[in-house]
Length: 134
Image (cartoon, rainbow, N blue to C red; front, top):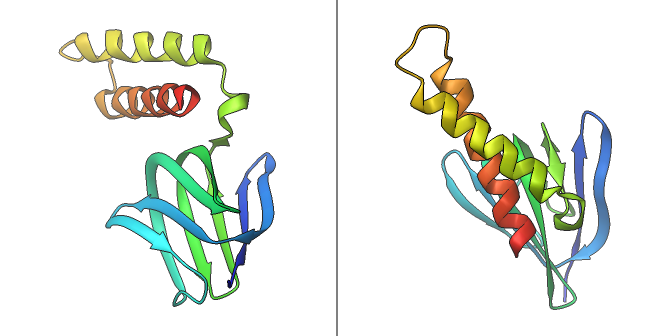
């Protein structure tokens, strides 16, 4: 079976580097992407969501907070603003961030609250909580 390399990189450095991947699933702003070996070259912006990497009949999930995916026939590179493996996620911290963001959104009618920023913080926290629980 054909396989390819996968690299997930953040500004802080690599988070995931492996060869032998059989499939990568990611959510781009245009919709869900399923990448198989030999996929046509592609660059797409990612949403805050999970990245699923299938290798040796196991699936590795990472929480990704936006960024870009670059697909080449033999390699997929994900340049993410932030990415975490489920074992690296501090669920208590993510829960606290979720609660802070929800509070800000409830106060959004007041001046000085950046609604878009609060919504992104909530989305990131929910994504991290969901990934840590899987």
